[in-house]
Length: 149
Image (cartoon, rainbow, N blue to C red; front, top):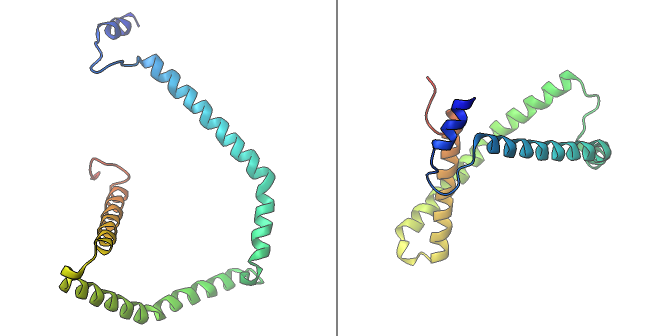
């Protein structure tokens, strides 16, 4: 113990104030207490209002509820969803090619492009890049440094 305290005294802060381990632990403990308090408040709110919200939501959406709720009915509905999505592929494919033709036309006539349209295109590209980066982070197991092999 004495060696650790001696080491802390000998260390010089790199930039400004460097908190000690005990100060960091105190901060973490206070943050943990705050988090526990907020979780407790959220739990109390859900226990009071959760069932009311659940019943209200079911009542508003009762036209979508299938009775009887059996495993067979759920399997049937999941198959309906799958094949409905598959049936919509040709129209989605057609819409994709129309959008692509529109982008090609805009690129050919880029001299007539307005600043607003260019800004929207830049934001869209930035959003695509952000989703790519998010996917890479998820693929790495939520790490920023690299893949675990």
